[in-house]
Structures are given as structure tokens and as C-alpha cells.
Length: 338
Image 1 (cartoon, rainbow, N blue to C red):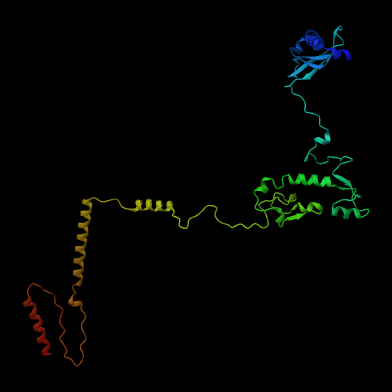
Image 2: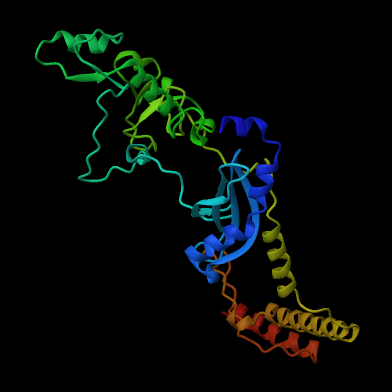
């Protein structure tokens, strides 16, 4: 075999590549004519073997191929069939690569009643009796009989710190980027114990979305304890504002109340009526000024003065002034006789 490989000038591979009908006969005997398609190529396996590929028309195996491996033991030896198998082609739909079950479990997959044991040599844990670089762990380890069997190792702390830092409550989250300040200066931030206290703590603000979660000191939200907000309008308001809607309403109201324009003829009639009304008022005022003498009061005369004869009421007769004077003379004489 070694001599054959050394002296091969390519004639063996040519013979293997030309054995298409032999390979087809083998696959037809194994699968049937209705499941074998056209010849699609040859793949070289080694110096004395090659695989002929045929399209597979098997239901449910679209994109798969029949692979028939042929071999040649020597130049004078006949070509033989090594194996016939069904393999996926470049466009075949295949199952994903196998992943062990302990690696398939992701954060949040553990449900109620589920059990997920840790590996025996889990690098995240260390025996509690071993010396640790975390002061908090050292204090627990010194309490003989009260310590835990395993405690968090340095690798475990670094792994948790990286996960928390890059997680939802880390400094790169959308909430932290839009926050006015960080958790490290918030009154609701409670630092963790041990070496993680410098970078992480728990949020105790029930308004915050991180309430009850471990947060990075560089995380932040809008419920920071030191925020002071000036309550002002978000819309800029000028010092003097005109309400155009009110002005338009008043203009429409004035237009509705204002009487319609009058024609010249209507204006002349109104002026004539006003003049007649004024003349009538003047005449009534003049008649009211005329006082009836019979209704006029009689003035009281002192005792030392001469008693004037009472003047009988007369009717004013404007036609003859001489007749009016005669009764007055008689009245005077009558008084003198008394």
C-alpha cells in the first residue's frame, strides 16, 4: 500500500471518478430508483477511495444526498463499494449541534420544583475552610461549626460582577443613560458586604424599577433621592398673552348686537318724530306753569297791620281788561266800609 501511494500518478483517482455507474447501481440496490436523483459530484476521501454524490428524492430530506464510497486496492484490482449513506447537503435542513443539557439551561429557565445541581468542581465555589481574599468570608469561616460548606470563590465573584455590570441594572442600560444621577449617591442605595460593596448594592426605592435588585453603583433612574424638580410649564409662555379666540368672540358679539345701517329716508323720519316729541313736551311744560289763583294759599297778616279784604276768587277773563278792574275796585270799597 505504501508503494502504491508513492508511485500513484493520478490514474487511481481517475478510475475512482469514472465509476459513476457502479456507484449508481449500488445506491439503487439500497434505496430504489424513485429515491435517487442525478449525480452531483465526487469527493476525494484519500489516495485510494472517493465518494460519489447523488441527489436524494426522499420525502422529508430535501437538500440531502446519497454518498457512495468506492475504493481501489491496486491497479490490477477491481473497484469495490465501501458504503452507501444518506448525508446532508449544503442546503439541507439539519438539527442544531448537540449541546449538553447543563449548558442548555439559561438564566430564568429554573421553575418551581426544578432542581439544578452544580458541578463537583464548580469554579464559582470554594470550600469554606480555605482562606479567602474576602474579609466577610473570613469572618464566617472562623466561626467553627457555623460556617457554610461552600462560599463564593474569587472566580465566582468576578463572574457575578461582570454579569451584573453588563445586565439590566448596569451603567450601560437605557435607564442608566437617561438618569440624572447614579445609585452611588442615592439615599435608597444599600451597599453589599465584602469586596463587592465597592461596586454593587441593593435598591430599596419602591418607585424605582430596580427595587429589590442588585444594582451597579453607576446605574441610575429617575427616582434618585437628591433630585429637585422645579414645577414649571414645559411650554414657553410670554409675559403678555393675547387670547385671540376671545377677541374674535367679542367682535362676533358686537357684530350681532349692532343694528343694521339706516337709509336716509328712515333717518329723516326719525328726526321729524324727535322734533314733534320735543314740541309736545314743551307745550305740556308751559301749561303746568299756569297756577289757578283759587288754589293759591292766603298769606297770614300780622295783627298790627291793616286787615286786607279777602279777594273772592275770580275767573281770569283775558278778553276785556277794564271789566277785570271794576270788581277789584268794589272789593276795595267794601273793605273800607268795614
